[in-house]
Length: 55
Image (cartoon, rainbow, N blue to C red; front, top):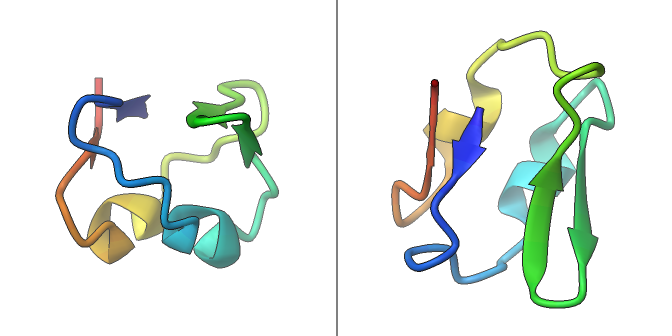
């Protein structure tokens, strides 16, 4: 998954929905750990601004 930080409002909805704990906030950035992500798409679905998408 990719986070478009120009669109992301850092609302943390993606962090809350990630069952694999693959997403974290670092300062004003959202980081997705590809080694933990199972590509379920929940973060894509919950993002209110469409800032997360599959590679």
